[in-house]
Length: 223
Image (cartoon, rainbow, N blue to C red; front, side, top):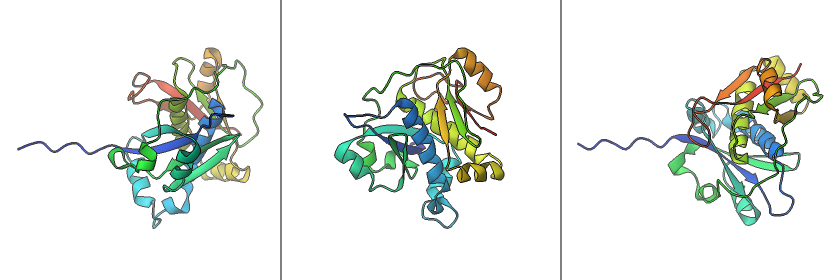
């Protein structure tokens, strides 16, 4: 008897709007990806009895795999017809789609490219900028080179986990402050210092670009 084929893994797909003129910055895309993921999870349609509840919960109970794609022009407009949430942040637009098995993702999504179009070259910082209270901060590891799409996925992982496991009072304060979020690209020394204060650490599964177990991103809320 033939063995049944393994089920396709679930994934939350995201699309970043990257037009030829005035493309967004890498940090802005990373932040928008995190905010879009949280907005999808927090949407009333993702709550019990909501129309997205089952797929969101099924995906969120697995490896929270995320795939970040690029969209522009009419492809971006067509993608808006697929169930999900779009967030605009600092000039970047990202849409998080309702999760599905990877082999069942809508055609409007799977047609979007994954690896394409370079964005700005990130310059690592050596000092922590001034951050307002109740800000969700995400930092990306300086120890491995990642495409902007991979960085966006790691940021979305870190932001999701930090938000999901935050104290309800911290979540409420963040909402009241209009959900400020900052993505940092620290140098090695600053990364080590920030790792000591972070409450969330993401260790990558190693499916793409970086070795499994890599501490790819960290996150925390400021007080």
